[in-house]
Image (cartoon, rainbow, N blue to C red; front, side):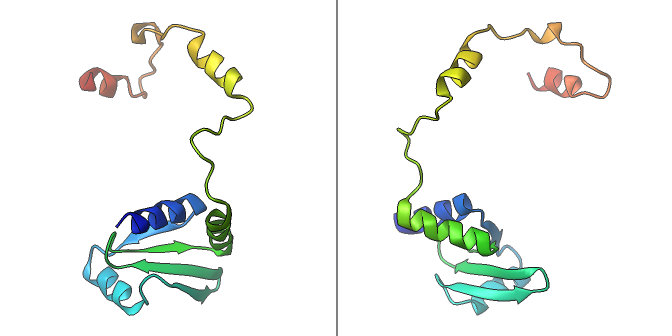
Length: 122
């Protein structure tokens, strides 16, 4: 179901958070929401927008009004495409490509750093 995958991607791009129904309480809550429809739930912190996807991700996407408006904007205009190049691309690329990588033994590792984890991992 590529459409549902795109919906999930667009939801998360708009700022919605996926809440997975991976326990009994989550499954019960998911089953009470209408599938593939927005539900507005008023809370003391403002409205929350809920969107249940019981088939593909077994989750509910939760967001605020701004997330909902962002999602609508994504549906209208789409997301920036892969051929979009940021105005400062050349600056970013030249900064990444200008120097050779630094050898890890040249770094002054502090006692509370992740040095031991890196040494064990690599």
